[in-house]
Every structure is written in C-alpha cells, then in structure tokens.
Length: 302
Image (cartoon, rainbow, N blue to C red; front, side, top):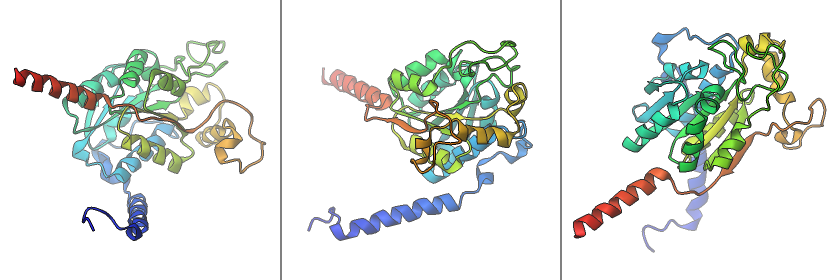
C-alpha cells in the first residue's frame, strides 16, 4: 500500500482527534495571555458590547492557534478603534475610515501575517464605505470585524449609517428618518467571500463565527451587533446593558433558534444571524503573486 494513503479505518480516529484538539483549545483559553494588561483599566463604558466582542475575537484567535507575532490588528477611529489597543500583538491605529486601506497594503507586503481589521459602523460604512466595497470586491485575505453599535459613540453620539429609524441622536433630535444600511448585505453584494453576523449575547456562536472567518482564505466580513449603553442606550431609554443585550434576542427571528421556540415573545423583523456567504472565490493576494511570477518567468525567458 502507498505510504501516503491513509487506511479507511483510521479516518474516524483522525477526525475525533481533531475534535478533541478543538475542544481543548476552547477549554484552555486564558484571555490574559492575549491582553496588554499594563493598559488596563480599559476606556470602555460599563456594559459596552465591544468588550464581549473582544473576548470572542481573542478566543477565536486562540482556537485557530495564531501566533501573536504573526497577528496584525488594524483599527480606525471610534470606540471600536480603541479595542485593538489592548491586544498583545502587532497593532496599527490608523486614520478615520482607513483601516481596510492600511490593512490591504500590509497584507500585500506581508502575506505571512494574519491581518484582522477592527472597525465600527461609522468608521466602516460612512467615511470608510468606499474602502469596504473594494476590499470585498478584491477578496484579499483579511478578516474585518465590524462592531455595530448603531451610533457614533466616542465622537459625540451622532447618527450613523446603521442607526435605526426614529432613534434619537445628537444630530437627529427629532428621531432618525434615514433608512438603515444593512452592512452584511452590502458586503455580500460587493463580493466578499465570507459574510456573517452575530449578536454579543451569543458568545460561543460569535466566537465560532469569528473563528470560521479567520480560517477563511479570502476577505471575511463579520458584523457584530454590539450594544452602546451610554450614548445610545440612555438617550433612547433602551435600559441597562443586560436589558439591551436581551433586547437582541427580541430582535431575532425564531428560526435563528433552530425553530425550537414559539413565536412569542419574538417579533418579526429582518435580523438574521450566522454565516450568509462562504464562497470559493480566488484570493486576491495569491492571484497577484501568481501574475507577478508569470511575468518574471516570461522576462527571464527572453
């Protein structure tokens, strides 16, 4: 028998070992191993969903076994932009709306790095919207985590592209009349190879979604619905942090719970979660390097 062929009887054992290793990676996660503890206490407001998202991200990084020296975190301006500061890796704090542009240059120059962008709904969809659609179009191997708290939190509470209808902000004192941008559908339409959405109340599901996005070879866009208790919550009487995250479940369709619940108290709406897109599109960086290799071979042949 060819020594490179695995006997059929060994396949289940191999799969079980892989599952055991995955479970072990989940169990032995210690968030302190991935944080710059000298920068604590953090600046986030009590109850901010961004802290939950940070834990889920670091947990996913641990599950994937990514070396911190090979991890690059790129972030922009806003509450989301400050999250990357606390990660003990190669971090890059860029200008407003430009983290995907900087991340593109970094990934092209250093394809060996795992490049993760942490951005917010204003940073990513307003001033940075053009960079998002072209990052999705190219399908370069970058993982983009968009923390959607539905408002400009750090810069004064202005309306953002994802602020719900009738929501009060400092720039919509009579209530927001603009339609809401669906970030995941935008990324899907622009060609992102991997697109998903999850809420912070479901930490294991959020962790696994991010882990799958990190593992995907191409542009992965993950929208995280994150509560803002102060700038958004207080102004709109949305309750405490726990009430806001529980409100995330009321905004979800019953089928998000595998049809294992009754329709009430859930109300019908369009907040779907999970993986929306996972395609086999060519990854841009690999295609670019293949093109360069082809040109160089032709030049040497002359």
